[in-house]
Image (cartoon, rainbow, N blue to C red; front, top):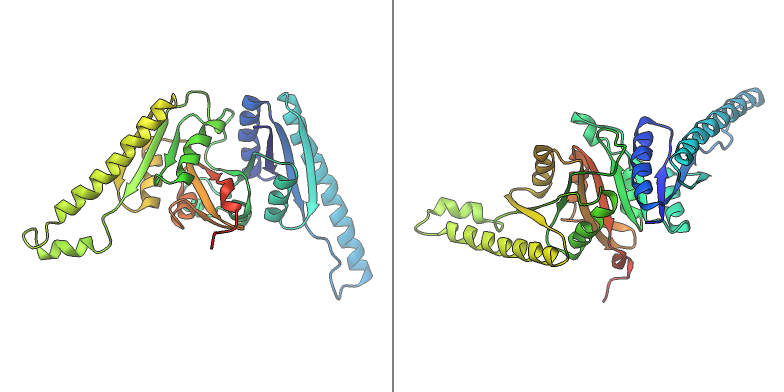
Length: 304
């Protein structure tokens, strides 16, 4: 990892993201680029000259205050022994972040959220949401206690797809060395199986269907663990029946995990996440930070 983009709106959430980004950058000796989106100060229509003058003075004062605050954060990065740059542009923050990541050939974008616990978890924020959907590199959405080290207890959500495999491979880049890897897969019975129970075991042996589904899932989990062991990594795969988003977030909360990793796939910016729309729900309800790992092959036009 060489370049990390950090969204900087001078809020508590972005400061939390910066603290985590510094910890990760120190591990890789990576450069941090602070990206600050400025408000558009275009003249307001139907306002007299005196009001425009006052608005201009307020805007100038805000710019000065923002510059001082950004300089303070850059000094924090330098004090950590890291290289840093600043990109400050006028426009929507999500667009500026993803464009900066492309221009700087970034390996990771780090952003904060609006909430930490309870109902505030739903407030992922439009900037984080837009960045996740349109970024061409991995995105770390920071939530939970401020961390001064890389993550120590990651949980990887898997559906045994290529995107999930990438998430498993990349999660180590934001974790401490040799962090234990926990993997969870949410499995479900085929649609309509619940209705078969009404017919009774004698008429429809639904237990047989359940056993067959679970056997297939277990075989995939065993293969994944075996492949990872051959690559020098030991993982534990937990199989849980239930709705994927609920399974992932509840497993993370129950296990005290500080990071959930998911894979992303899709085409031309219309990003669909691991397990479809379930992953976005996972991010919204997560008790901890979430790493969205991007599949670079997903930017290729779909084959006809």
